[in-house]
Every structure is written in C-alpha cells, then in structure tokens.
Image (tube, rainbow, N blue to C red; front, side, top):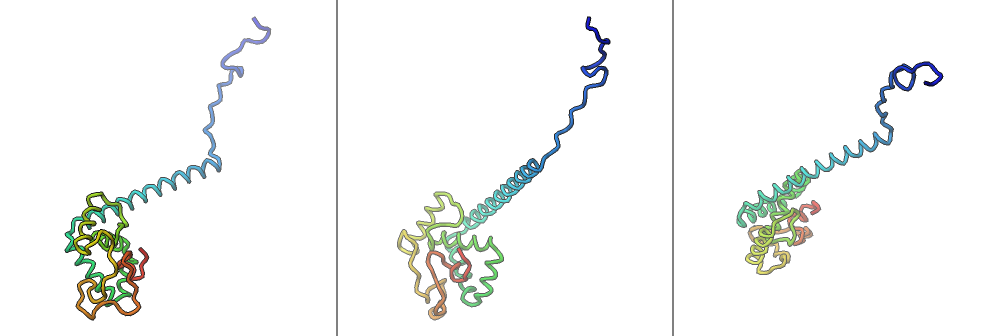
Length: 176
C-alpha cells in the first residue's frame, strides 16, 4: 500500500545483499601474530632445553659415586695436563659442562646442582658428601696433591684457582 513501486529482493531494491569482506589484517594484527609465534617458539625451545637438562641429570644419577668420582678425576687430569683442551671441550659442549657440574653435586663437592633434582637425589648427594668429606657442607679445597686421585706432586699448578663451590669448572675458566 505505499506509493512507490513494488519492492523486489532485498532492501536495496533488487540488488543482492553484499558479501561481507574478510577483515584485512592491520600492521598491529601482524605484529601481535608474530609476537605470539615468537613466544610459542621460545616456549618450545625452553621445553626442549628443560627436557635435555632433565635427561642429563637422570643419566648422571644412574652412575655410582665411584663412577662419578672417576669421571671427575679424569676431567681434572685433563684440566691439569691440557687446560686449553679442557676449556674448549667444555665451552663447546654445554651438555658435558652441565653433566660435570651435576657430577660435582653428586660427589658432594658442591651443595647445589645446576639441574633440578628430586629430594631422594639431594639426600643421596648429602650422604655421599658426609661419607667422603665427613661433613654435611661442601668441602674446603683439598690439598693439591690429593685432587682427583693424582699422585703427590701432580696437583694444581701454582696460581691455578680452585674454588670448592665451582669445582672443575673454576679450574677451566668456564663459568658455572
């Protein structure tokens, strides 16, 4: 009953309704997506590193205290005989450096492990420390002639630092 021509189709008088356009991503949208992707990648890398560190810890914890001490003694001998080789070996192999730091913890040479450990492992390390060093605390530096089972006279060179809290890592100059 209106005065105009009869209407056909949609509200635009016979023309089809427009198809909604897909939103055009803005620069802010792109930056946000890139940040999200970067954060997800960092999370994946961190998870992989944590898994690797946990595996290193688990592997070292399967060794007996005698095996751990033997490994540390061999590394110490290498450090004394060829410090440049030991330094290069550790700086190029972070897994080895972590394993040796964890070994120092397991042998009672340090009070803290660079790796997360279960309470039972901490207790075992404390027991080893008490048996080897006669104390619940990390030991004072041993006399140079007894380090790593070396015979008297084959110990540290004068001026070579040995910090009981950093162990072999301090001898090589690789930061703990």
